[in-house]
Image (cartoon, rainbow over all chains, first blue to last red):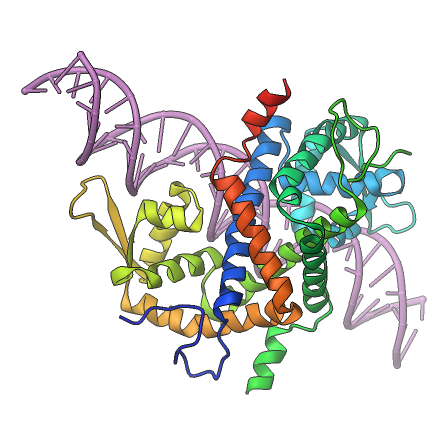
Length: 176
Length: 176
DNA sequence: CTCCTTTAGTTGATCATTCAACCGTATGCG
DNA sequence: CGCATACGGTTGAATGATCAACTAAAGGAG
């Protein structure tokens, strides 16, 4: 029985390079580890602080911005979330009292989201616990070289995906 | 204006170690890179093959199993998905004709999901393209040492989270 | 053997995200 | 100046995931 595995075999018509066993192990560990890590961090935030991980990311970005405020599009860009997602998430956070929206002063199209005092207090409460979880789950099981490799690799991933060096439509055309 | 940043400051009552700048950069690159990578891989599978990333993961696990079949609980464990999620996802895949469910022969509680010929054909079609995307987006922007670091770190993450060495309730009790 | 606890999987309601369409505003070209 | 295009953000329906509760089957203790 032929099994699909992500290393060399005569699968498909495409002259494709499959992953080596080492590449495969790295990929699988990354996928499973990331699934567990995100679920763990999200569950802890929700149970202890009533925040989801995306809400936490948004609050971090707002807290770092001048006047704790960002345009919706800037917020979407910095989190790499869709504008629709940010609109829905900010609406929920506004209902919870963590954020308020105001019209942009110099661009009638724009909306600025800024963090309320309640939101800031919530982040102050949640951040130390969250960072501790990140440390225990990831930072403490890696050494400095490992972390530098992660930083370098995922910076390269960002470069490739964000700046169009990996374009599936383009690569499909090249193969044609 | 005090900004929340993930490195040392007098935030919170907990005697917490914040992340160093290097740790912070690794963490941020990982979070943003992972968000982009998952969105990219999921979008490509959906647009080109009508599969979501979780559905693809499930199909890979089934294809690797004896007789291309797994119990629902085994499937949930191997993907690190909840049983409820697996039930809903398998129901959708069954409606699409990629999977069939049967009663377990020697345990009346159990249900076995196995891949149909149509499902297998779909995976054969999708796998080379998906692997190529993984190669281009991640493997090609890392060297062998980087990949070994990723494998080691995320294996450690899995160990810590899956085998109870990071237990938020326990760590909270220890701090009390 | 009976009964209680645990396991396996499902169900349906709710929530969060995605998607396409929409509306209002800004910009730039003819 | 008017109009067409692009931008910014929102909306609501559809989809997928989560959650708590549920049912059926298995196992073990008394």
